[in-house]
Image 1 (cartoon, helix red, strand yellow):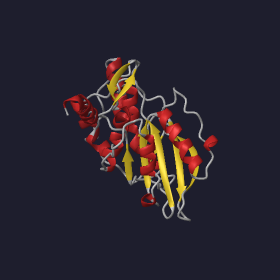
Image 2 (cartoon, one colour):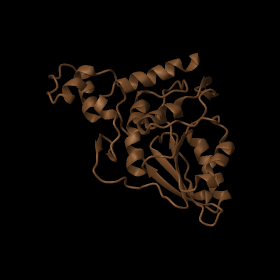
Image 3 (cartoon, helix red, strand yellow):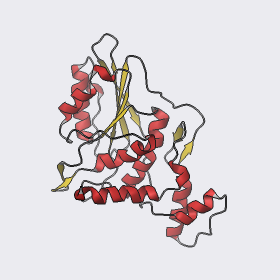
Length: 261
């Protein structure tokens, strides 16, 4: 547990930087590249019921040049905005998966515990008050695929945060094995942290038939500085009081971040 202490403290500090009012998940959201705002409409794409199983694959957020198995500040800001995107596009998941963070992965030429996907999806799980399933290491995509393509998942929505090359490989295998076209799955570019790869499995005849769709989070261009604790600014906003005058560039960034969230 000691090796994850820093990761868990980082998540706690990051979430602590949010105003309390932003931690309540409304019925639906609309997300843009510059802000996340509450919407009154239902999610744009609701999870399909009946015979359709929907698998939503997201890549981890942006990472530091040295790797560390970790997110950088921009990746953390993406992770904090991701719950609104999932809510708006799909609704509440039935299950959430990420790789086992206890397994090491070569990252930047050194082995590190691979917490990046879990750190990316943790805010989503927290907002929806759900556990994250982490039974498989990042390379165990065959086992992951077997768990996902299961009749017990008929009618369910499952969100998976993983490594982008392995998502691509798994989905091509999945479509080939279940009546889809592997060629429909595009190459996931190394600089693309925004794509969403969606597989729908139609269980109508008892044997799944797979189809693929490419979507986007719309979260590129998030701030590159990490959120910090802003108790005074949050307290002012909750009480309906104006924020203090901007005195420094750093202060401007802090206030803009509070308004954006």
